[in-house]
Structure formats: C-alpha cells, structure tokens
Picture 1 (cartoon, rainbow, N blue to C red):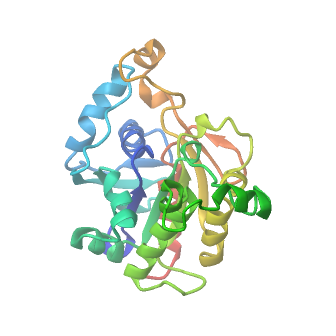
Picture 2 (cartoon, one colour; picture 1 turned 180 degrees about the horizontal axis):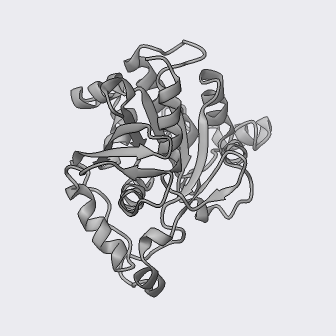
Length: 288
C-alpha cells in the first residue's frame, strides 16, 4: 500500500483470472462509485490496456505471456479517507507453477515475497480437483487402483502432485522464504484467499464453505496457520466471455457494470474494490 510495510503481493497460477480482475478493478477505481477510488494518476497501465480494449469490445482478454512481470501503481483512497498505494502486478501464471515444479524461486520473486505484508492468493476452484485419497475411496480401492504391476515402474499419476498438495507446497515455499514457516498464528503477512471465477461454481454457499467442500486439506492448512484469513469469492466478469465472439450486452452497458464479490457471509456485492478496501482498513488498524 502506501509504504513497503503495507504492500500487497498477488499470487495466482495460470488461468486464475489475475488480469481480468485487475482490469475490472482498474475500471471501478476510475469510475469512482465504489468504496475505493483512484486518488491521483496511476502509473504504467500498459499491462492492462489490451485487456481493457478486449472487455470494451465484449470479448475475453488474452493470457499474460509467461515471461511478463510488470507493476502498475495505483494511488487509492476509501470512504474513510484512508489512503494507499496499490501495486498491482501483471505476470504470467506459469511463473508461480514453476516455483513448485522446479523448487526454485527467482531473486525477484524472493524479494516480493519477503517485502509484502499482505498476500492475495487467487484460487480458481472450478479448475481444481480433489485426487483420490482415504477421504473419497476405501483403503482397499486405493490399494487396488495404485498397486504397481512392476516394482521398478512409476506411473504418471504417482509423479504428479494433487492440486491441493501443490497449492499447500506453494504457500509453504512462500512462508519459508518469509521466515515464518512453523509460526502459529501468522500475523504478517496477512492472507486473503480470493476464489475467482465464482460464476463457474454455481454455488450458494459462503466462500469458506465452498473452499472446504472442494479443497478440505488446503482449507485446513490455511486455517491452521492463520487465525482469521479473509476468504472471499469474486467473479470479475460476471459471466464467461469468449475470445472471438462479442457479448453485445457488455458492449452496450460497459464492462464496469459487470462482476461481483461474494462476501464472508455469502452476500453479493457489485463493488469489485471491496477486497482491497478490506485490506486497506485492516492495514490501518494493525501496528506497523
């Protein structure tokens, strides 16, 4: 936010919806009818220009190239006159998967993880699956399905981590770099889970219930390390957009009139600035 001690790190794998949410959030800030508004000139909007043009035309934006990492700085202010400087990154989500697949973290990502006091972790539940384990199948079924026919052979299934295990490992890597792995409860960094593309889930459950239903092991890991993590749902676009065929209503009404946030209690808000406003208020209340 307005100093390094209150900076936000956005963490999301490929396809998690980072760029669409960033573009829609930027439109909301510029329109200025939410709880958070732009408080001056933003810098380096180039990462979002192409996506903003696509949304204005009623089509989905392109994924960010894997080698990209650019920071866009947005000065913001809320209704309580709390000011902040939001550093919104745009990067290829493959960089995040590389951390767990290669067990390597670049110096640039190491610095970002160490310096950010708030982590926003984007999770697209619709694309994640629970692998077979003792919670979904009996021991006998698992033993039959996974018993190798050749003791020297390894199956592709055995080499690939489950989605839950991969996300837990990613958080563990970040916590280790930050030097807080094993601490409980973790005060800094503050954690917010944003369950993206909420419209895909077709769920009436509050976000924390949807997370536990879909990814119970990951939910347990988060709750055992953070006393009170924020867990919200967000649909940045409000509904799916195609990359080729235009959505006429999007063009007519404008993309800033689409999208919503699902709050902790399950209530829906059209204000996409709400998650950032919550974090801004939280940072103002916490000792530096």
